[in-house]
Amino acid sequence: MDLLRHKKGAAGRGFLDDQFLIAMPGMKDDRFARSVIYICAHSDEGAMGLIINQTQQMLFPDLLVQLGIMNEQEAIRLPAHTRDFVVRNGGPVDRSRGFVLHSGDYRVESSLNVSDDICLTATVDILRAISTGRGPRRALMALGYSGWGAGQLETEIAENGWLTCPATPELLFDTDIERKYDRILASIGIDLAHLSAAAGHA
Image 1 (cartoon, rainbow, N blue to C red):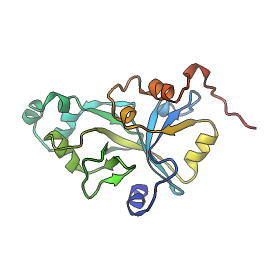
Image 2 (cartoon, rainbow, N blue to C red; image 1 turned 30 degrees about the vertical axis):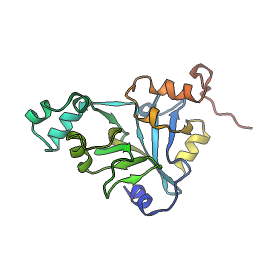
Image 3 (cartoon, rainbow, N blue to C red; image 1 turned 90 degrees about the vertical axis):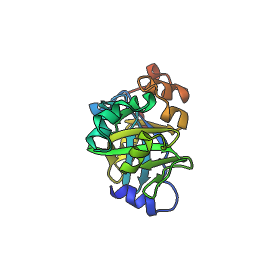
Image 4 (cartoon, rainbow, N blue to C red; image 1 turned 180 degrees about the horizontal axis):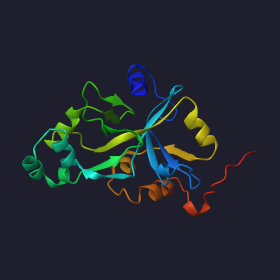
């Protein structure tokens, strides 16, 4: 997408890059209810991120077979940690497109630096590398992404749709997906019971 291409050629980071976006209880869009989104690119032109706490029915070996990276017999013989690699629902846009967020120990020409130690790669090379044990030390994969036009995300934040906080690799990559929303809120000292769905204006 254009925002990612722009990011590759741009110097510096956007204000919300490498931040978690946490849906507030009053989130009007059901697709984002109780969602945590990791922001990969943010600029005056808009924002792009991946939901990290919603899973797909498809497993990683199914995806490898579907993409022709390996056949079903090879997929069955994958090591357990690769077989169990969860594919997440990154968002409602372009659901057939895959993205891998990963630690900076793996880079190819198409990899984008989101932060000093987190990269985004959207090419099939990284899937081959993960399947053969030559991939990054930490990774998560998503199909689809979440996108906002110029000024749209800022407006949603101002209207109390989202909370933001700095992301940590531990909370980003850990596999406790079901409790991620509550744990990220707890990490910034917020009790869900005390969150208001209404925006406050001074």
